[in-house]
Length: 384
Image 1 (cartoon, rainbow, N blue to C red):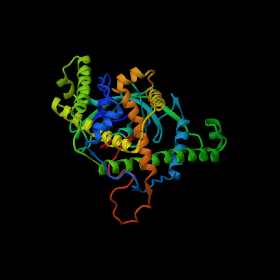
Image 2 (cartoon, rainbow, N blue to C red):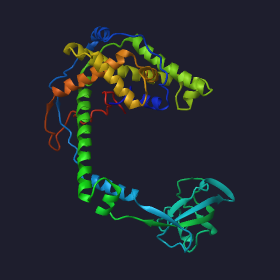
Image 3 (spheres, helix red, strand yellow):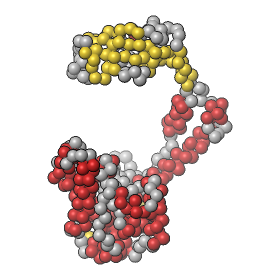
Image 4 (cartoon, one colour):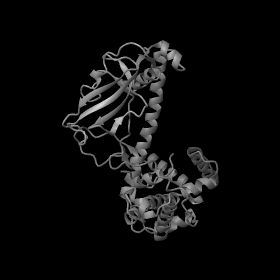
């Protein structure tokens, strides 16, 4: 389970840590919410919904990815400081590029060293050929002409000089993918054991992801089929203002006003607030629908279940106490209870759904449980 995401727009907000320190809204019991919300919610069907179960197979390409990764992780590179560079060698070079005697952006390795396979044509034409024949320690000029259709207009068609140093020739030793590698680099003894274990791991991961996709698709159907005539204005405004306050605090911490801060991310104050409000309404719409279902079905959250959810979120976030968790993510006690109720409602919808075969090729589908009707996160919130 992930921390609830209100919308794609707020994922970016959370990535900027703008959620940190969200103020807590006034406490309101789940029962009070259900009574208030149910006045404005018209539920669609949420039992007996049809869906096509996802079944993601593990392919040979999936197993090959693990094999190739293991080989790569155990490939060694030894610097060689003698000899002559030849085509096909991997060399480590430093360079500074000049056009008309002036260094240009992106033309400097900044002394960090750059690994280049001679003959790979990953650099501009004639660059790599001029390294061939040099030895480690050599400093020399490489002269090239950028093509007329080069991606940078400032460099297209221009002559350039690169002051270049050949640091070393890399001797690369790539191990064979065999039982000896498996025994030395993993907890398994043979290629067969390793691949069997990886296949089992992937099958388990796919089953988990497929189940989540099935549930998410069903959740979206419930949300699409239900209607909310009005949002609780106070709750919407409280959440919006809480987030705006957090943004303001973040701006002040960076020594700028909120307008300047938001402009750095391409927002005006009005457009940002508008998107926040839209996102909050999306979240509250879901909450209204799911708490209404919970009320009809007698679904509740016990104190023990709520506390377990708190501990689960603490483990996920790496935080150590509920107070910090609530402060950082703007949770109230009832938000934790709702997380429990939400999952119970999702399970109810899934357990009462009807699995059907996928439509034959060419047949139209009105949206299936794969999420084709809209990508959604673990909690049914639509993501772009």
